[in-house]
Image 1 (cartoon, rainbow, N blue to C red):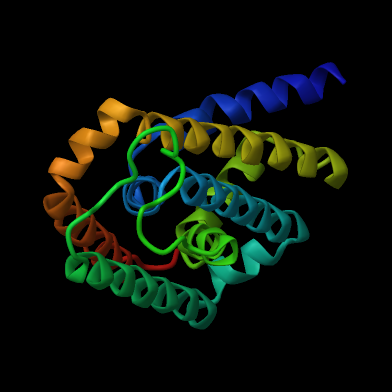
Image 2 (tube, rainbow, N blue to C red):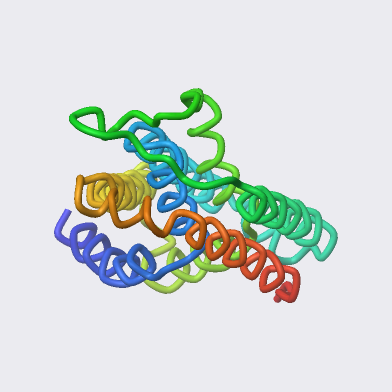
Length: 213
């Protein structure tokens, strides 16, 4: 048990940097909080965390190694991710002025409420259609975790990582929807849409340049 605790702490020491590093997931949660309110941003956060469990699951099963060695599979996932990020980016660039809710209902948008399913899937797909986690988790599981560690223990590590990732983005969701922050974002809403759109497209182009191996 002591060995597993050391492994978990080692994994989290590395993963903590990945959590706070700005990326497409961060941009997605920020946009959801600004455009659709706290509830949508939290649901998107859970989508991202669930997607992480998806990546961990196939890594444990050995599929991650197969994907990393298959140029065809890698490119299929990569270009699906590129198309998705660029699509979201174009939507952001075309979005109108941001009108955020007033008063106590800070967690509910003034515009038509985004469905829970859509908010969740936005986060899940943004992370799932990115092949980079394939190599990230393969490197973590191959260098920091013993091959003798039972699969159930590895799955437990993944659950802890997913929980921490969700907690981080839920915190971001709350921070971005407090009254003062909300008011500032509303004033800058037009430029936030343009900036987030450019960020999504930029991440899409960056992903397009990624190569397997």
